[in-house]
Image (cartoon, rainbow, N blue to C red; front, top):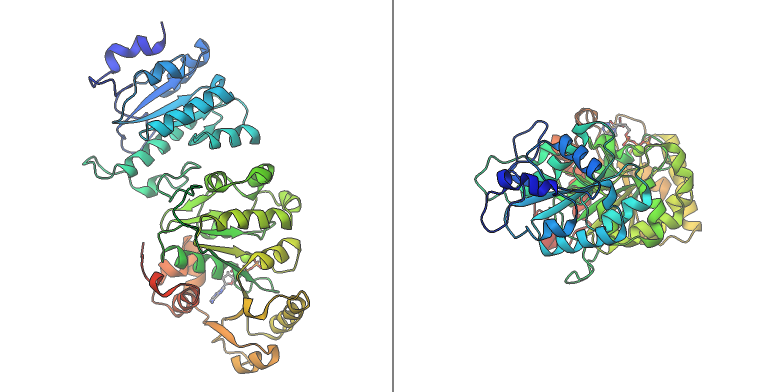
Length: 438
Ligand SMILES: Nc1ncnc2c1ncn2[C@@H]1O[C@H](COP(=O)(O)OP(=O)(O)OP(=O)(O)O)[C@@H](O)[C@H]1O
Ligand SMILES: [Mg+2]
């Protein structure tokens, strides 16, 4: 007898075979979410262990087939696949089930998380892969996260809504996101914008994050911010994200990278819907990521994003040159001090030597109202380049960073927000401007 049969009498609550478990996820905290939870694991011992972790109200099955026999459309079902389910056939079956039943989502439990397994699972539509060890909270939290996404999808239900903010570090595949399907209606006219400066601390990350957020709020299509400052990138920190995946996770699968796989590795900035590919958490990974890797990432992002914004380090390297090459526009950012301008002049010369088309380049001057000796006209003459964007200096910038917000949402009326918005709008088709304000 399977545990599913053992629990059958007290867990089935609908007559048409819809419900496979008690109508709540084993939430560790937060308000209960009305989904059913089922464990599938052939090994008796492992299955018992998972059921014990999740609580007695779950149903348990030895095989996916047994679960399928009990499914129909209706209440959301989170399927916890045990470690023995991590084989190709079971994951393929799980993928078919998810395709047939949009109300079913799965979480895979594994003893050892490898990149190959992660890739295989994500391709099969598994929403999360967890190593649980002896901590029951890890599994319960994963189930809860997936359950919350069901809740968001069925927001019409009168149940107390689980706010999106309650699941800041959502599962790899965000169901709310527009799906980067191969059969999307028409190819997106994606614009790739790299923000670069030849001087550290000039405000690249402030501009890149604010620009990306502004663009994300202007369209319903995905917008992605890529942190190509691979060693010291701080985009994730600036946006208060706790990334599950970074560029380091793209690396092992880069040869087989496609839109669904890449999308599943992006983290969503919940307040604005912006997708983010953060820099590796370990600077050691930076050396392993080449220009070709970044170019491939951008190429795949182009297939499903309306805009891609790339933040960079403050020096030329292969990766930066790859980003410049792969971009439609490059925003060169500079402060109004002599070393900044000198470095930018050298940077411009380098880009010209590399035959970067002049119309790809834009000049943005940061802290452009500072009481310094240089004035904007003087700088433009020195660089032989007209500035497209003048960003004032404002204390709201560091204040917003300390809050984990961009200046766009923190101080929308500030001069900084207005300057960034104007710059963002110069990249938008007219119809797209101000379409969406999250
Ligand atoms: N317009 C502004 N007004 C006030 N402060 C600003 C402005 N722009 C940037 N800053 C401040 O400058 C600092 C550096 O900004 P940021 O991290 O964006 O620079 P960066 O060019 O990305 O630096 P790095 O080269 O280290 O990556 C931040 O602390 C930010 O608060
Ligand atoms: Mg930076």
